[in-house]
Amino acid sequence: MGVVVDPGVPAEIAGMLRANAPLLSRIRSGWVPPATVPSEPRRRNSSGLALLAATPVVIALMAVLLESPAAPVGFVLLGAFVFVVLVRIASINELPQVERPHERVVYEQARWYDGRYLLPEEFDEEARLVLGRAQRAIGAVLRSHVNAEGLLDGARNAVMLPEQEWEIARLLAKLSALRGEHRELLARGIAPEVAAVIEPLERALVNSESAVVARVEALERYAGHVAEAERAYHARGQIEELRARLPRYEELLAESGADALAVPEIERLAEDADELERVLRRSVSSAHEAFRYLEG
Image 1 (tube, rainbow, N blue to C red):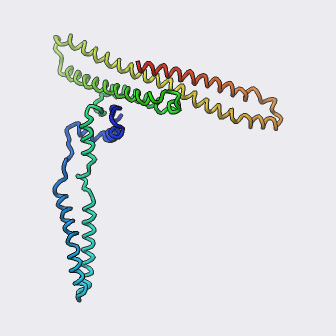
Image 2: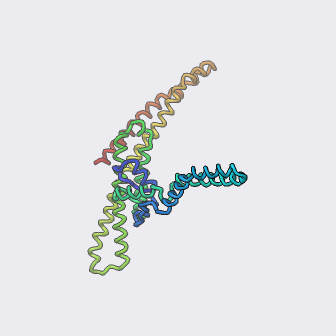
Image 3: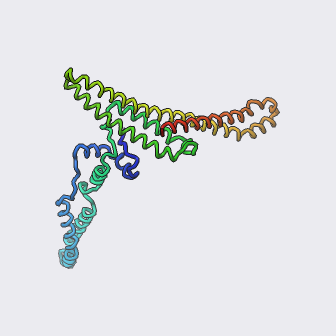
């Protein structure tokens, strides 16, 4: 699993956060990228600019040297100077690695949207499994053809399902933190007098997990209805394709004199198509019912 982002975060920022999970982990642990450009690269670029400024003077001196008997030496020195100038130009235009803004940009966005994204390490193993189930169910719905073709309420799916993922992830992260603290407390040993207090806290953890799992199971039921509709949708398309070919088959049978043998099996395609249409409608209707259950 990766970074889970509140769907209210702008899409561009959300994509940046999801793509930088290791960097976000370092930031969460207290690491801060450098905010200013080190002085050494600046001095290096300043020297390069000074070299460029001196170029006309050096070229004039080289011209004088080339007119003298030491012309071959002048050619060598001129070539060397041009090479040095080109190298310095490249170093001026190149931004040193420490000056590259990406890490700083991620850091600033991570601080601005702190609390609106969750990292993988914020979930314990049980929570990761439950969140993975929710994400698979949501992905199956959003990637389905019946959703893309508008047989489901695509607009509401696009809004509500990411909200469901975020809310489930937020609850699981909180549950993971409390479970971790509870395990540490138990590992230190519990006095008999405290046991009576611990038991209702443990029930609260179990009941909270059950409530979150119930949400996930509702998503999985919805995804199951969508999968049924998806199968009917594809089967209906195949049947319609075969029905479109029927005239060619009938023509072949008539020309071959075998049309009397043809008939019932091929014409049954129409009945199959009608039945698949009914199955598709029932599946979509069931998916809508499951969706309303998620809302309420």
